Length: 451
Image (cartoon, rainbow, N blue to C red; front, top):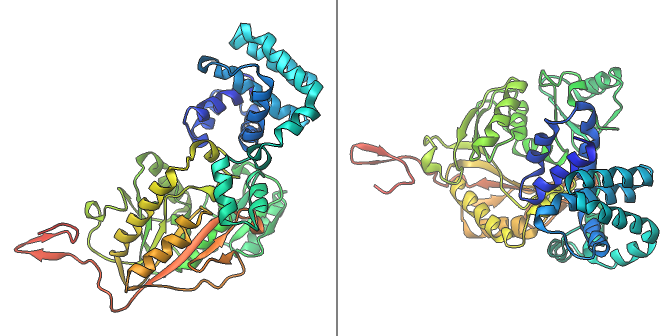
């Protein structure tokens, strides 16, 4: 399977509802290893610039292609991305694409050739027309651009620009086993240039992406791949040896492992994940790190199904969210997320906050986190929660990163080369009561069931 056709197959899977993290490995498993980097670059490139390419393709086609011919449309999207990037000779892109179209749909080869050659002839005029469309200019769906502009009017252009750029490869050093300075020296010895992140003590940014197998000590758990913003969670929660710590919504396990690293491996971590398909990644990360945690496959928002009645000193709620802060890393989010999803996510976040709070010890800390930049999922969510409860208060986060939002602290995409993340640290009043198990007659019952 040629690289362009492979990339088009990935796009087809994503446009039919599959996630990039699942569709790409399926195709890579059928292609030679030496082609993987090119296939990935083509796929991510098209998805980052999808809105611009789609407006352009609509101008070039006389009428939309039928559903059964969507592979032709995706081959043309890949070709237009390459022609816009101008890193491969135009004739090579056109000739290869026309041959691939002929193999897939013989009748469409002439049409594909005409579309691509017209683009080359009328490039400047076509691009002027394309850029009059807001979605093409900002590389965002109109509904999302509208929400971002409303939420962050002064920062919107910087946010949109950052979302369209590839993220750096950032590493988290296991400070329980090696200092950041020593690990930087190991990278230098391996011929990998890198710099310490200026705001996150455990973070290192590589000058250029590399295969993780080249990273010194990766297999032994000395280092993990994790964005710098995501690395802030463990430090904010500050788990101590012996404390019982809940990581709700835990997969793929990066933060689970970091909580263990931060406590010297001595915290008693319970990792809850509802998606059984993602638990394998969680187990793999724990095995590579050589730390132990109790793994529970369950809905964290239904503690009656899994909680043993022993309260937690610390809770990390890395809540399901719109993921609008990590679009640069997962550009397929733009294809899958819809405006109506936001209200459903807000309701789910509210349920998790309300239910998990009952499991927290008096005086304990809950860290609410999302990789969203939408206030209704972040500051407004936390504000509602604190105002509704007498036993909840915010612990201010004083930091050089991000910005205060009144409730919690927000990092916008691209700030200090980080993903967009939100954090709010909540403390339970010492006089509060935890939802401990109660006795109903002679039989011990869950605190969430009626006797």
